[in-house]
Length: 350
Image 1 (tube, rainbow, N blue to C red):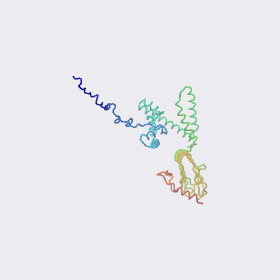
Image 2: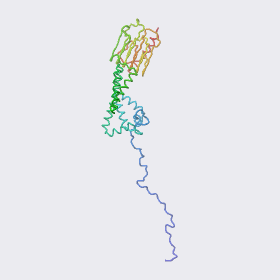
Image 3: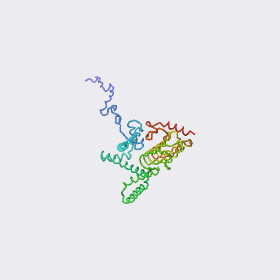
Image 4: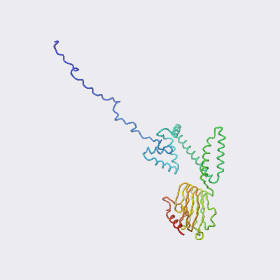
């Protein structure tokens, strides 16, 4: 070979290096655009609210789950309790078996322990608990009823005896189950005594229709529990220009009927319920109601009346039926405007 033969350059010498093309990603490193975001398709979970709660956050959790105002569920629970009591059972079950959206509370911890015993056994324990609570409410109501009937001393003796048993058995570390009944009895009796409930005077319905002032008892008419009616429309109001009357009822409905031309001057008290006097209606707790104050027109009824729990009505109407309970507010009740108008005319007359 001739040494003058030119040497041909290699490809690496004159050609630039080709750029490296990007490698396709490995299958396990593919873009995540096709992968669902975390929690995007996860089904919603019912949780009790830890921030929007009145008792256990059940209504708040239901409102968040269904996207509505929780007040709707709160009203529903209250109404269901009033109509059969199923709302209390449903609320308690949800409170125990539905977790919170925050730190576990006492109800959730209780639910966890119950679930460890098996579903049906847990439900049975919850039902037993509800029945026990209902029994305690029954004891409290019974104690209140006994005190209102005038049996305050026997009720107090029972409470004292239970307290003495607790004190004696405390040294042996037992009989703690007596504490809830004793507390229920004490609360019921104490509330009845504080509210001055008085159910003495008989139980049932009684209607009086005096035809003369002399036949009206000096201390008026009294009833314990039930319906008390006094119809004064057969009195001779031309002869008896001013009639004084007092009535007292523990629990139920008290009714006084007078002619529409009679001016009603009334001082009434309702511990809890509704007072309707000559078309003027008030309701609530501890309702003191005065109508016709200062009127001197005759004929005139001067009334002092009270109802501890229930409804008190003074109806100034000539044709109202004493057996009709439909007076006062509401779609099925009688309009009270004519009674107010009659009262204004009768009390303005000289």
